[in-house]
Length: 342
Image (cartoon, helix red, strand yellow):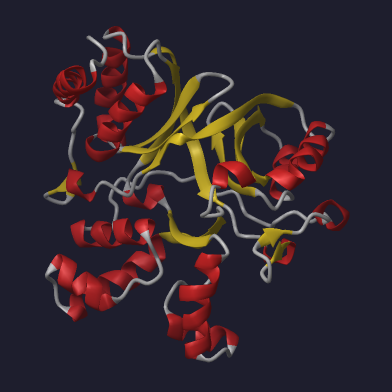
């Protein structure tokens, strides 16, 4: 999490032979359900994140197809569906200069009848949290269940992600960031050289710059065999204060957090089924929960930085043609699946 995915860097920091580091990262950790992703400072990229909550009269399947399109062409970073509240949560990372186009686009989608009950909140920050290694059994690949008796909160400083008006990035930086968001291990210079048709020297220079834009290399545990039977993903909303945040950060299963500009706090948890009762009892006796959302794994999506929207050293306004793309998608849906009608 501290030095990044390069085997030699980890070897120097720990004193563990490179061969052992390679074996653990490539073999052992994946078998335990542990994956590594780069957590990026979106403010440093010149992007402001927004949380958009909405409902729809259409099925989650149809809406997820629309959101997949937005993830490719319209700055959508993440989405999930709440099974109990029957609404979507979507996080957009948008350049401030095209905020008006973004908001107009959402209103247009609302007027078209695809979504309803829309709520838009600017996020002060969203971050993945450090993995609490002391509460994980690496021999069995499960969380330890006595974490409450050893309660300790992670020390993670709150830093507002102000979008930089002049981000020090170019398209090559963004392409490397996108690769790090997809997979960190194994990721080799030689692969990037071949994929982007650039020299090793160029890749090395940009990679070192990209490291300055990474909050941390996040480790996330999701069992790869039938996760829906082993874990419960939750998105919990509460009013923000330091004690509420400290409570959530003390739970090993809390893997991400975000705070809105109107001081709402959101925690994202992947709770092992065996410890679900204990965790919920602890939470309900410790904080006032405003909303408890059971996330549907089938209708969730995470997207990498949309480097294709960065042209001539600036982020472009892709929302102008957004409605056209939605109508094209609707025609395909209607033809192939008997989908919805605008």
